[in-house]
Length: 316
Image (cartoon, rainbow, N blue to C red; front, side, top):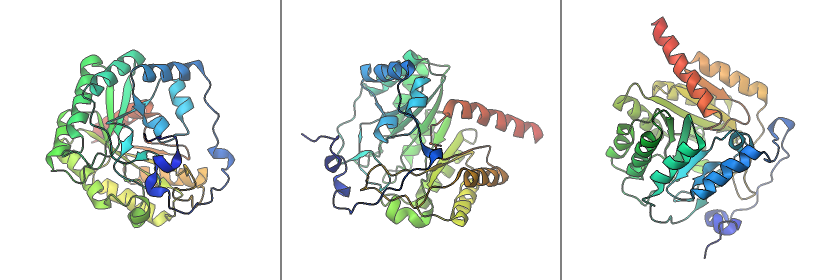
């Protein structure tokens, strides 16, 4: 039986890689271990409903803060990904069959937690003909049914090996925010995200807007992987050309010595400069801090995103 707690079994594709030195984290990137009652309550609700979260699987540094407030990012379609990106801590391998009862359990957890905004993501499922698009759609519909007042944000894979109808299924289920991360600059894709294609991911975001111009789109990248400022600026321009509304930029943190090395720790001042540049390029919402992750403060940011669009329409 495979034990995902053992690094070599969790990441068999990385076991042969030489260890990469992990530099000491600067003070601005450090977080406290979670201990609050709210954290434990959220954890227990998720365990009871047998749900997987990207917060745990990807080793998010903000898990203590988010769970203490009753926020969690649900990860559907299992805990094993068919891709082996060099930055990611989610287990790689052959996933189990889809759990047909999972959409209902997610909806029940959202209702129990009383979430006003929920983020739903997934592993890559290249083994499925539609990449899991229908499962996403069923989960969105189940949450809508149980919690009609909850806004829904999805963070999807790229559906690279699927027919174009896959993304259409997800958009037809009408999430409030459609997020798909570009993750890094195009020049680093071969080493950071080898199973993906930069322009395919960009086109996916553009296609969502073509299918539903009113739907908010969102994407994010990590920095500290070896990119330069010019290439980050180009990614911003590419996203705006695809009419992406919301940009997130966060510091890459190396999960284990077998993962992609940290090239450097980007300073808070540099993140501030990225944020200013992004707003200048026309994004409605930008989150750029060392600890920013796709779903960090997602509910509050969605409210700001919606307000920014209304303000822009008012000026038109």
